Length: 77
Image 1 (spheres, one colour):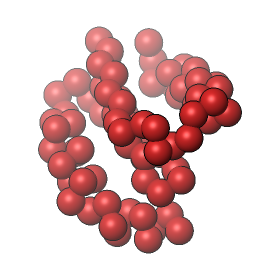
Image 2 (cartoon, helix red, strand yellow):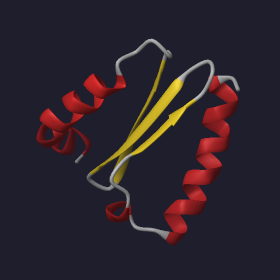
Image 3 (tube, rainbow, N blue to C red):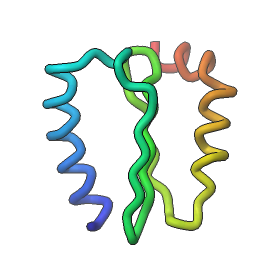
């Protein structure tokens, strides 16, 4: 799956999820594909989504998001 077609499918899926579940219900999402990895974390009333290469260290990405959550929340407010 190419990242572009994944983003389109993700947009549709997020609209469906948004109508049924509040953002507080989701802690984190992580998907792994042959060509790329994806992680999504709720920040305030938004979702921060990261698409990365398969060699990227998403554990480090998630750690940095956790460490900088307060900044990210003020950034999106």
